[in-house]
Image (tube, rainbow, N blue to C red):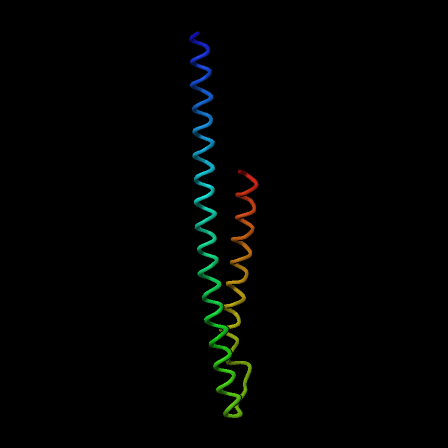
Length: 96
């Protein structure tokens, strides 16, 4: 009888640990998704700014591509960051 309760206690403990791990993983995935949304909003803002800048230069007849390199590099960097986060989500979901 003691073995039964000992075994039951171990199984309950294992299940609790598993549920805790899944909850942590789910929380981490949600946090990463929030980070991705923030990065995408920043990219949308910068893309609007690029468009506004190009249009203003166009209206003045002063289109010069080199002025936009910084914004484009920031967008590229954030796109890479999004890819890294999305890969991390896949890894976490594979563990669940």
